[in-house]
Amino acid sequence: MNLTERDLKVIWHPYTQMKTAAPAIGIVRGEGAGLFDERGKKYIDAVSSWWVNIHGHAHPYIAQKVSEQLHKLEHVIFAGFTHQGAIELAERLLAILPDNQQKAFYSDNGSTAIEVAIKMCLQYWLNKGHQRTKIIAFNNAYHGDTFGAMAVSGRSAFTKAFDSLLFEVEFIDTPNADNISDLKSQISNLKSSTACFIFEPLVQGSGGMLMYEAQYLDQLMAHCRQENVLMIADEVFTGFGRTGKLFACDHLQVQPDIMCFSKGLTGGTMALGLTTCTQHIYDAFLSDDRLKTLFHGHSFTANPVACAAALASLDLFLEPATAVNIQRIEALHRQFADKIKHHPKIKAIRQTGTIVAMEWETGNDTSYFNSLRDKLYHYFLAEGIILRPLGNIIYILPPYCITNAELNYVYNKIEQALEEI
Ligand SMILES: *Cc1c(COP(=O)(O)O)cnc(C)c1O
Image (cartoon, rainbow, N blue to C red; front, top):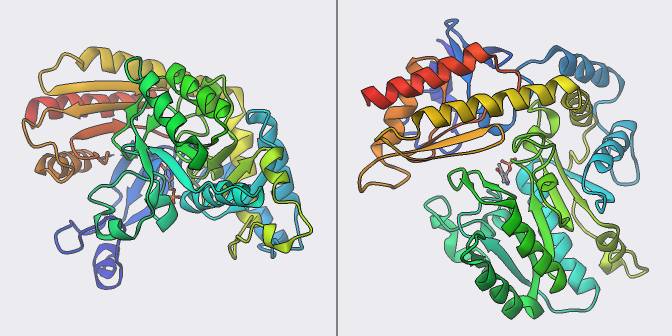
């Protein structure tokens, strides 16, 4: 039996209706932006394997650093003990994050980084003796699949089975020139009961690569600061170059109180979550009262191998060549967007940094589950490209090492699909 057949017998895949989904493709090898299946067919990974990969697959430098770490120390309990990799990663990241970020708390993935951030905010107020439990989030937000992270995400088909169990959240629209003063008054009305405001800066990924302007987010954040509402920037997706700068928050003047990272953190090599915060938040947990402790931790918190992968990825990320690659992709995306924006099948096209997203015209059927999505997905697979439309929205967000030839191939196949589908 091949991998596809063996998989069918034992595996339950994420976000997959196992009854109707096409069998999973067995991948045996990766190199650069390419993934190779068991028959040797190449796929260009135009979605960076669920948005995590930034330097390409099986990068030899990361592989070497991970291998060295495995021979030194694979894991150690992170309460009462520490290690070089966790410290160095925190030191180096805090040095390039907004300068109010002073402390690093590790976890396992993006969702857990969000859980930690939410708990930090809720308990911050409790520790200070205030009754503030409300959370403000954006409509169409996505912050993860664990219960707390799901609760602060927009309600959708994906949360429907659990909606009645999710805690209540105050959802507001993303800011623009027309609604900004309205949003500010909404925040002012809620401020005395609000613990925090959580947002994906500039780009709402899972919501459909929805984009909004830094200047209005800045205004909203300045207002939150004035009203004493803590701010959590979820950079799980936008961090590490996606938006064209190191972090999406580098497009902003106002600094968030808490930031969350995962996905690109290890270059997409393995799972690791990180929540950073200000000294001010950290200090609210210092006490002789044991109940003021942040009681949160995971078995694999700050896993040394994951930290080694993150440090190796950071080395590559900070090389000048990576910034050049990011600018190159931005420029190519822009040309492509200009070229196809007037096509009758393109309802909208938008770009931030290395992310370009196209809304396909579907007439009246705009649901995530429309048949166009599956048609497009399989069309591109057949052409050797992994693109995973969110409903009728196709987006490209490649590893930064993708070649011009590979990127042009993807653009050409999208143009071909516009004619053929
Ligand atoms: C993917 C994602 C998460 C959740 O991360 P996981 O590692 O999948 O749990 C949280 N926030 C944003 C913005 C994401 O895109």
